[in-house]
Image 1 (cartoon, rainbow, N blue to C red):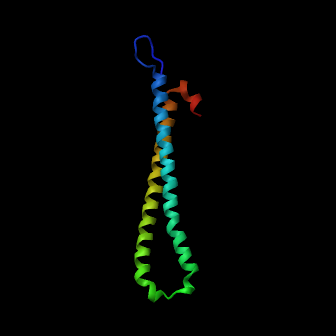
Image 2 (tube, helix red, strand yellow):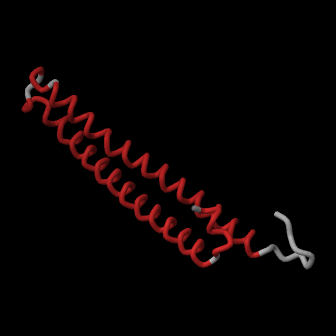
Image 3 (tube, helix red, strand yellow):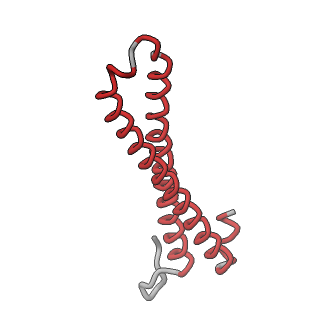
Length: 113
């Protein structure tokens, strides 16, 4: 980062730095979204396997195993949904902040779009 003669960084460099941090946070939100989708998809695949193989077992005999599995799947669905919701909110928050900076500082707007 280059500095002016008095040692103070230029305003544009500070804004670019802030935008870089916001973009890094945006990437983190997207990776959290990807993780939430994967966690959400796991119970669905487990349940689809259970449904596909249901003719090979009796529900009454496997109920002690099925109830904890369904509770675990419910917990994973809740966790995945929360991660997706939180990631989407954070993503739009960072996007809105970047847009505000580009509108406020027109000299760097051409680099952002």
